[in-house]
Image (tube, rainbow, N blue to C red; front, side, top):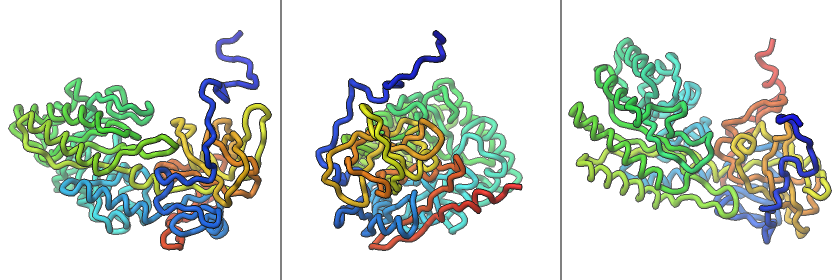
Length: 460
């Protein structure tokens, strides 16, 4: 038999692993406050967010639809600002960025991390203070660096020797002296998915501490008077729920701070430990308490610097998912309900991997409920799937939905505020859904949904 081909049977690819059968929840109608937006509730059976009935949202804006609880997101911004008072909090815009989010950040006093010229353009378009922006990226173009320097962004995080030389040349030509940080790969193993672990040496980000590349980057920057080296940056991964990895990273970064002081007589005043803090997606997930996180990180940095005989640098953190993720849901309409006897029921919705690729990409897990009504029917083992021409077009691999689920019902998927709209595509020529903000019983569009005209625009 070919080593590349095997027969497909009714249990192909372990569709329903016998060793870990999913357990039906006690209450299929429950809205767990640890997972759903802070203003979520059931009112007359239907899910409401921000005081708005999802049935009204579907009628007014259509489905699929991204729904963002404004009070939830703003309150999490305030939580971070309070917990990290005296430090810097920069929202990681890659999680989800639009003009309205930037306005909320400005109102709540947070900074912003951008990872491309496009993200920078969004921030600048609404007058966000450039000095509160940090520019990231492992391959920033000359145009992106030029715009960042000309705009006067607060920090540029350099990621390679080439970028140091490129930025030095641009700064000299433009007559500016940008503040820079070095992205250091510390070798810390984050207990997360391979694709979102970012501090091991064998990956594209940063300059290695272990090989001496980070120390050499310090030498090259200090040799360029047109660049101002202000600190070190580290990011160990995403969806992390404890501070252990950050403690190891902080200790390793401190060894470099000591080396910089001993070799160059320079004390770097800033330390950025990145973000990557986790959120609850399903029952049993734990999300870090923000105040405990802040206290823990401050304690870690203070202790390691004291042990090394260094002044405590100004700490910066970069939350993204934990600010915008829990406040977002995606609303879908059920199209077909197909029972595969002896296995499960496939529930097809009117979106899919074009609006949420994370399940296919990372094996992400989600919580979903029947949102347009309550049901007293028994649980039905289901797989929530999209409408794309891919077997891997799955939103929720294993879940229980009411057995009376029918076409036309609305399904809501929780905790989709981060990385879903940002990673959205037009696969199979599906238009990207709108994003609406809800608050005080009202909804408003903050990102217009695409139309077929948008899909055809630009084609010759």
